[in-house]
Image (cartoon, rainbow, N blue to C red; front, side, top):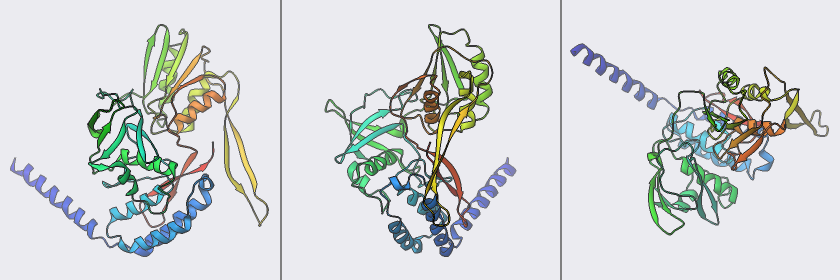
Length: 374
């Protein structure tokens, strides 16, 4: 027993020593500045939605260059680049790392901010187990005892226009996602005038060990995808499930829990079971090309899905919601593109474009950027 205690104490000592060493590690400001120029260059040349954003790249370069001398820790380096990406108010642009002071990517509550008032517009109803109060339409009055409007104003971006409706709306939902290190306590004024307190972190979100769930209601099959569109094993799982449903009158594919997106390999694998011939499902558009100072020429192409295996021929409905994200949205749009399903539900997550990973030369982490319109 004493030996076990000694081992535990020694392990804690080593851990604390490593933490201290990391905290004392000298921050190379020249390397950060080099990476600042690098990330802005990548965004300027590769971010397909840049022209649609009201963003001043010169402001970002100037303001963030001045912030470099204030950076004192590795965590602050990460937050420096995280906040820079937040300037573009696009949840598809993210670092591939985070720290305790980082913001989460999403919240189980969605809101809309307009005229400096924020209203709850949607909740992750099919995934939340313990929300008993109807909060749709409620005004978010306070966040952690501070006026929500003020919290938006204080969001740590310095160049985007916080008076712009789209920007302010995005920031409001980023605040609801919250930092990993902080609580998320809301004061809500319901539509009936009643005021309640809601701790977002007290909401219990369903967890699944399986890639999908299947159910039958009146000879209609329901396949629910459990946020697994990025797991290539889903294709075989889906095939096996579909084989048991050939005699059903119709099929519902529930994509309301695909918040983390996925990849087109899995999406094509699913759609390929519902077409009898090659069909176009997606158009790609990248930056206009220009060489040798010649005119810009648009470049785009159509992607097809080919039939695979025994086809399911009965009617199909795709169910989507606010937490249908990225490849979940692409799959829904693809089913519509191949004219093989009716799409029903609410507005989706709006994570637009195809994303690719980029590296920062002097950091151990990189970032992802939307480089193609789909």
